[in-house]
Image (cartoon, rainbow, N blue to C red; front, side, top):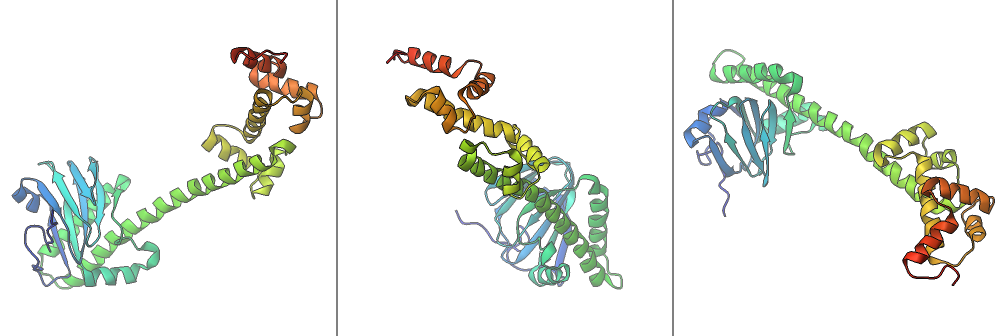
Length: 294
């Protein structure tokens, strides 16, 4: 199916104003189309859709989600998008022409570059602030007072900076989680390489560049266990495998897994499993039909 390309939805490819931006309420255009804007794209325009109240179903590049609270939707150029609005929708659509997009991006810098990526930013506590901002944009757009062009661009810049700050906060929130997963992966790799020597948690933590306290909180948050529990579970897994799949004696298994003696290993195993290593092996052999004496 061919995706239509518009300047403004339903108006073909002619830009309807000498301004580098266009601002209108959401109901003004969507009411004419029975509150549904079919999927389409803009070749060289960026849109900021601000939903203040009501409900909006947003479809961007085939992904759909519903807005039931105030939010700002960024729609970059060439991004296929469509909307379905409730009849009580309140909000604004700010459309920015390519020259103005370039100008705004230069002014805010790469750090706040936000108009290249489709995203939804919840207004949260800034709901009234954004509503006042877009109301001022709409009022100024409809007016003809001195300095109109400068003020319009300034207000548009405020909207872009707000979205850019939300994007920065979102990235900042993701970074610790990503770093946490990377550290946990490095920790489990270190455990895998060293568990038979029963390394201390302190040594493992320092080996991956973390304090013991940081490693402890990270493991509990992401793995639901303490670092020591993770080490012990890996040792226990190997102990069970040796009991089930090898003919090694309890003493040999204890020595292989870094225990000082078989008695210490047996206490460790019983504490975590509830039975002794010998009883665990015997029960497994009985369930598989293998004689404990074979």
